Amino acid sequence: MNEIIKRALFFALAAAAGCASPASVQNNVAPTNPQAQEDPFLKDPAGPMNETYRILILGDSYTVRQIKGAEDLKRKEDPSGDAEQLDRFKELAARYDFKDWEFNGVLMVRLHPHRGEIEHIEFVPGQNPKTWQASKLFQEDLSRFAFTFPKGLVTLREFHVRYRWKIKRRAGLSDEEARTRAIEFLKAERQGQ
Image (cartoon, rainbow, N blue to C red):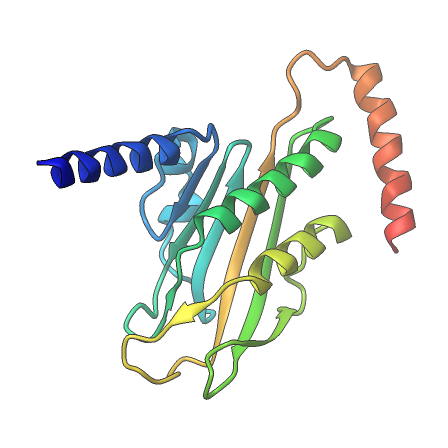
C-alpha cells in the first residue's frame, strides 16, 4: 500500500510541475495555445522544399510540428530546452514589441551520416529573417536539437526547418513611444551588421 501511495504522489507532483509554467511548449503535437491551433502556418501542407519541421513562436508558446519524414527521424523531446529558448524569444520580443512583427526563416540542416548529430546549419538562400537577432536565435535554437532514427540508420541526412516568430505590439503603447523604440531598434540593427 505504501508503494502505491508513493507512486500516486510522484505522478501528482510530476503533473503539477509540468503545469506550473505559464508558457506553452509543444513538441510534435497539436498546440494547446488557441492562437497556435488556429495559425495556418502549422496547418498548411509541406511545400516543395524538403521541409521536415515547422516551429512557431508566439507570445507565450513554442510549438514544434513535424511535417514529414517521421519514418526516418524524430526530434528528441526537450521540454526544458524549449522553455529556455521560449524565454530568450520573449526577452527579445519585449524589446521589439513596438509594432507587430512576423519573422520567417528556413534553415537547411545536415546530419552526420553515422552519429546522426547536426553537422551543419545554414539558411536556405533568400530565406533568412529580416533581422540578425532573429537569425541568430533561430540558428541557436536549432543547434540544440537531437534526433532519433526509427530505422536505426541515418537515412534522412538533409532537411529544412521553417521558423515563424510573431511579435504583437504591446497594448497601450502610444505612437510616440513606439517611434522612440523603433529608433532604438534601428540603432541595434546597425550595431549587429
